Length: 362
Image (cartoon, rainbow, N blue to C red; front, side):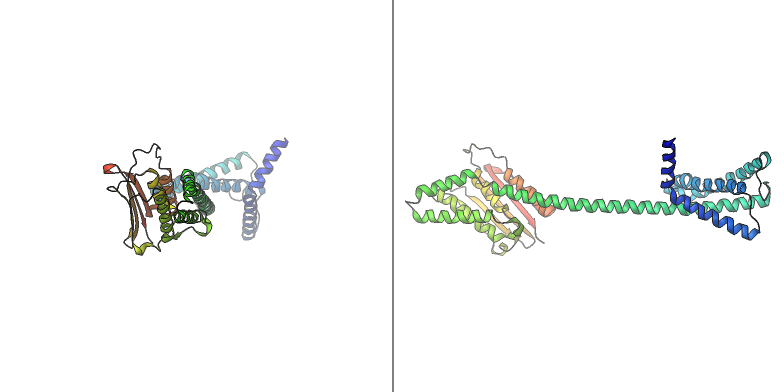
């Protein structure tokens, strides 16, 4: 019993707007009709007719209109047809039911139920009246529902955009931190060992190596939040420091051709991209053959920045290259530049490893 009572209360609370609206509508019609006619009908008369009318209202709104609008191509002819069927069926049906109730019950109505012009005319008018009311209710509810769905969709899109921006920002910071941590510790230890063992023998070279290494470490550890983009010339300076350190380590026996246009040095680029390409060349390339020098080429036609490297692959190197640095760089480029950046690499003819980076300039 309590469960049913709670169920009814929940139903009333959920649909309270409908009950309030019908109360005022019925009150208005009864009062207005009573004043115009000069008398009021019996409660049973009002109850029967408003049960029919309210049933028609919700039947049209929840059954006829959804099916008529299900296929937009057929709505233009299907909706008038269904309304016509409603009128043709509903009017005689209500007159017939009222006639039965009037005959077999004590229902008192102010006009006798009969299939004459007056009854049919009044029935058609009231049917169309409530169908129009129902249609207005249906389209209003659909508008509010669609507006709510649209607002919810827009809110979800906004939340996704904010979340994606946050994720991308955190991922870029993570990638930067990962790249910083990827400075080859073997190279660092070997360089420091070289500096230590040669400081007493060749002081100028040791001092040069210390200076180059210091500048590289300072550059690699700079704050990302302040240097999302940097002038390309800063990256080139660190590449030169990297080359100088490797040359000192190899007693200037490395063969590298570095070509760089002057008009590209102020172009903004994300940091550590060029450094990664060059470090990969030193890690896996054979740079000792004078007849097969490594090539670093940086140029621009004003629309596109092009960075190209090629080097002979060191076949004596036992370390397997997984291209982690290059793949990492490709992901960073995709996140920052999207389709405006393209990084390609692979083995070409004569056992050369070729890398090509093209970035469209705004």
